[in-house]
Image (cartoon, rainbow, N blue to C red; front, side, top):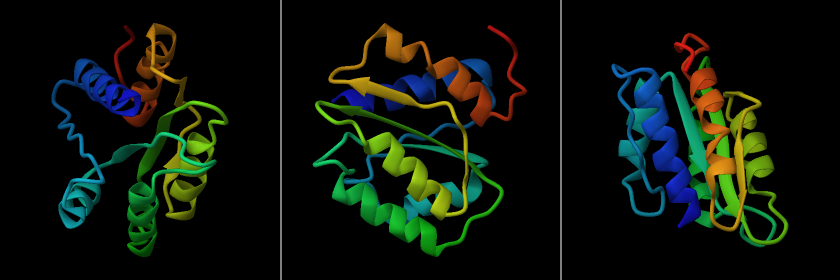
Length: 139
């Protein structure tokens, strides 16, 4: 699935720019929600993705974001990404929900029509650098 491909590419790019940074990729629909929250608690930044579903986001991601909001995190960065077939609202919805949850949402995002291609992946280095705090070495 396209959103998972983007997630893996973001993880790879963060590792490339900052090899000492621990990156974990979770599928919210399948992962233990408490384990994911423990990792969010330990992290400086998160990237959350969802395909667009009926003008919104996956219900599993929506429920998880509601849980995230209840925990009132502060001083953490977040990025949004996703794929879409028709309308493509998922990234906008994710950005709004992450802001509501107290995250500093960066402008950089990846929004792909259908299956992501190289032009979509080209946005990932800047997104990774911003999540890392802008201190990444130039490519």
